[in-house]
Amino acid sequence: MDMVTSYFCKTQIQDVNTMMDSIISDPRKDPLGAMMLDYLKGNQQAFVEVESSTLEMWEMPGKTMFRSYAEMDELERQALALCRGRILDVGAGSGCHSLYLQQQGLDVDALDISPGCIRVMELQQVKNIVHQNLFSLSEKKYDTILMLMNGLGICGSLDGCNLFLQFVKIILEDGGQVIAESTVLEVPDEEALDFEEEEDEYQGQTEFVMRYGDIVSDSFDWIYLDFATLETLVTFNGLECELLATDTAGKYLVQIF
Ligand code: SAH
Image (cartoon, rainbow, N blue to C red; front, side):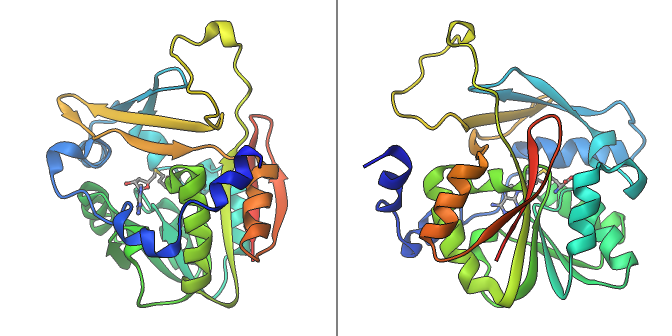
C-alpha cells in the first residue's frame, strides 16, 4: 500500500468532531487577529512572524491581508469570478474576498476561527460573519466553498484532507463546488534541512507557529498538497477535480465537485 493510499483507511467522518473543532478562545493565542487589528488602527508596518518546521521563517504583513481586488493575483481573481450561489469563504481573514463578493451582490458567509479576524471583519463591514471552525459547520449548505491563500492547508494533513472531502459532501449543495488553492512545494535539498525528517512524512506536511510581539499561537498543522495527491484523495472520496490554473511559484487553483 503506498503512502497516500494508506492514509485513506485511518479516519472516518465521525472523527471530525474530535479534530480541529474549536475556535481560538484566548486572544493571547491569536497573533494574526491582533496584528490585523493593529494594522486597522494605523500601524501599517504590522506583520506576523511565521515559524515553520519545514520552511524558512517568513513575515506575513498586514498590508497583504488587507489586499484590494486590484492587489489580488490572477488565481484569486479567477477564483472570485467562479463564485456562485450561496458562498462560504473559509478562513476569511480580513474578509478581503468576502467584501469583494458582497459588493458584487453575491451571498457570502465569511468564516474564521480567530476572534481578532472576526472583529476586523465587523470593522470592515463584512455582512455575514461566522465565528466557527470549518469542521463544526452543519446547518447550511453551500454552492461554493472558497479556500484562498493556500486555503486547503487548513485541512492540516493528508488525513485532514480526507476528512475534509467527506465533510464537503455534507455541506455542499447538489452541483456545488470547492474553489481552492494549494502550492506544490519544491523538494528541498536534503542537506539544507536542519531537522530530522520523519520517515514517510508527506513532503508538504508542515507545522506552524505564528508570533506577534508576545502573542504566540499554539502550533498548528498545515499542508501543501501537490495536485496528483489531491486528485487521488478526491477520486477516492467519489468526487472530481479540475486543475484550473497555476502560477510560477507553484501555487495552483483547483475546482472540486
Ligand atoms: N483567506 C484569507 C486569509 C488566509 S489566512 C486571505 O486570503 O487573505 C488563513 C485564515 O484561516 C486565518 O484567518 C485563520 O484564522 C483561518 N483558519 C484557520 N483554520 C481555520 C478553521 N479550521 N476554520 C476556520 N478558519 C480557520
